[in-house]
Each structure stands twice: as structure tokens, then as C-alpha cells.
Image 1 (tube, rainbow, N blue to C red):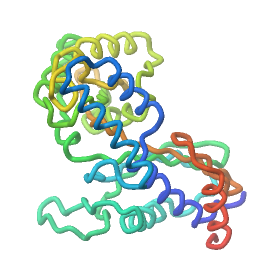
Image 2 (image 1 turned 180 degrees about the horizontal axis):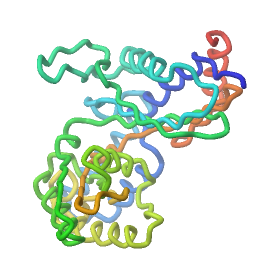
Image 3 (image 1 turned 90 degrees about the vertical axis):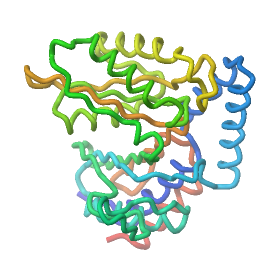
Length: 308
């Protein structure tokens, strides 16, 4: 089986980082526009208008939507015919840091030393999943500190049940307040173990805004939590109003009979993400953004020059 050229993978990583920080996917932008239309509070409506103007300017100028371009979490579906994916992603992050540019945010957790490249031990962080058909699918989720710092994990007792899940979600949102720059997207993980649970909460943020979990019980819980928390009154940027949430998504895993882990991970109004699928012949399809054919052809040409 033919190997996907290294340069195609590296160039694609740079491109999805550029897309993620300069243009929101259509599902996120549509949710923001809906909230703008629904808001009646003058201050909140003005804030939503400023957000929409920011989207327009960022796209027109190729400038990041927010000065905090985050740390970089990748989700990779790995097909056959792929080389050193981690090494190529790291090269792409280093290039994008200079070329987009991205603010260098990755520091040593104890010394706080900043290498200036958004690189370090386990950074960028990569979640791997098995793929199929020889294709490679790469998703990047830039995670800013304002929303990430509001994340919470609870190891509840099984007796807490659904009531405990709802109370935990409410308390997490009340604690967060305006800090994560609402309207926010909430991802919740339920089950697994402590580390699995928070990973599920992050993965939930990748789903299209407003989509439902295929499990009917979880879909119902998503609706209940969205309706209850959305009307809590925090509103856009904490200015009050009827919309605090873009969406509430849940992912789950089976867990130990004596465990009941629950995690919440939050994205601010700039719920940034970008996904590309690379085919064995080097063709690149961008799944979250409308990318002009010329730019895709440019990536493939670069791959032919610099591949294996």
C-alpha cells in the first residue's frame, strides 16, 4: 500500500491549525447567529454583534479569532500507510506557530519555562483511534485557558445517580460564571475511569453543535441539562440574557460497578475545531470548513515535492 507523503500530512496540520484559529465551523457560527437573533437584553445583543463582527474580520484578515490560540489537542483516526504521525504533527504545530502565527502557550508545569514553539512533553497531546480504508483523519481542538480552567472532574458514588450528574453540571456552571466567555459549549463525559472520563468530555466538544447522542437516555439527559442550564441567566459574556450555552453534549463509557466518574470540559463561544481527511493518494478533504480547491491542490503539490 502506498504511503501518504510526509509533506502532505505536515502541510495539512498547518492548514487545520490555521483554519481552527481564524474561522469557526458552520455549526458553531450558526449557533452564534441564532443566539444573536434571540437575545433581547441590549448589552447581551451588543456583545453578540461584536462576536459576529469579530468572526468576519478574523476570516477576512486571516487573523486568529482570539489572542489565546490555546494549547493543541489532536484526535487522529489512523489508517494504514501512515508514517511518524506524532513527529509530523509536531512539525506542523511548530510551523503554524511561526506562520499563522499562534501564541506560544506551552510551558513546563513546574519551572514555567516556555520553549516558544508550542511543543513539549505530551504537547501537543494526541488521542489515537483506529481508522479504516487507508485514510488518515486529523482533528485539532485549540484549548484556551479561560475555558479549560473551568473544567471539573468528580468521582461520584453510584448512589448519586442522574440527580448527582445534574447537580455536578449546575455547580460547575455556577462556579465558571462568565470566566469561560459564554455562550459556551459544554462537553460531559460519564463513566470509564478518571482519565477516560475527561477525555470523553473533550471528545464530546467535537460533535456538531446541537447534535444528539444516539443513546436515547443520554439524548434526553442532554436536552434536560441544556434547557436547565441555558436559562440560568449568565448570558453572553456574563451580561445576562436567555442564552448561556451553545450546546450540551455527552459521551459515555462503561465503568466499574463501584465507580461513577463525571467530567465537564468547556469551550468558549469560539468553539474552535478543524478536521481534515487525507486519502492514500494524497488528496485532502476538509470536513469542517469550506476550503477552496486551489488551496487543496497547493497542499497536494507540496506533498509530491516533499514526500517520501
